[in-house]
Image 1 (cartoon, rainbow over the protein chains, first blue to last red):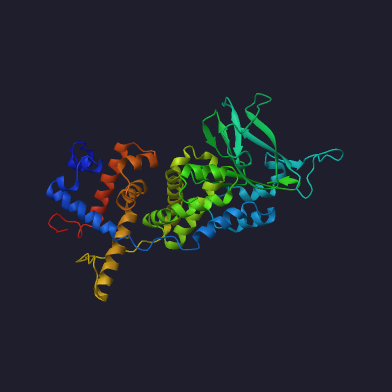
Image 2 (cartoon, rainbow over the protein chains, first blue to last red):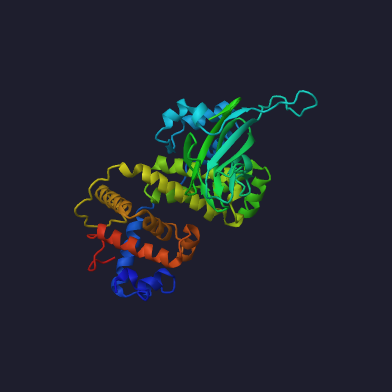
Length: 212
Length: 188
């Protein structure tokens, strides 16, 4: 049996912690020591620099910075961004081709709860086409990535699930949860970004009066 | 506050104490930067990846199911980011290996020995880069981060037997790449 497939091989027991290095057959022990020595050579000065903590906290602080600062930072920062093949065209045709749209929320004028200086939230429509889905939910940074999220409805039974959500102006990441388990990005989003957890998030940019 | 357990720190951050997150950064930054570097990223890229991982961890702290094991959760984020970065860098040219290196020179005393040690180090680094992602990750986590098979299993989500298989295959690949340095007749 090949070395890598033999579960009774001493190396298997050694890797499991059931056998000490000294107990390995001599040849295997020598090989293991050599590999350890070689990999140990990669240990060098790999500590974070002194300013690292401040840099990270600064980046976190900027998360709550004004919209234009965040949008600029998001747009200018090098990062893996996938734009659909028709991305350029989609932008040009955004008004008609993109299936979510937005308009300014009604701002109460009498006895309302408008907050001085706060940008009005914007009604943003999310659409997901899933003819075979039993349920579709929307989650994103605007609901703290809650699994409950916001439920979409298939009002006409055609598999086109929609929901309108009030969003603050800014850059938002979101995704859809289909049938309670499957996290899927929005194929119609202007861009997709890696979420750092092995999945992809969709991005919507909401400004006063519109969403992309 | 520096002696607070991870779970308590995470709870403080979740309750709105943003500065408390700095404690988690300080606690894990060196290990994470080291891990990203061992995974083959350059210094600048490793720092970027780890910073981005911390920011993502902060933004998605509600997704951390077991705050007491914040470190493992963060490790997974960094690992994912490393894989993404490695894919981005996959087009980079990797230089040919040196044909022969005669000594490890681990205790380099003079310029020649230091030069030799540097050449070996570069060779090991290049060899490690040729190991497939999952196997390289397992090797780094075990040999350089000092985790056990069980801990690697918890961290990566792979079963312990799958982790051992990755380690064995990774070792074989590394041995093949470093054949002149790892040979049956060679004294450690």
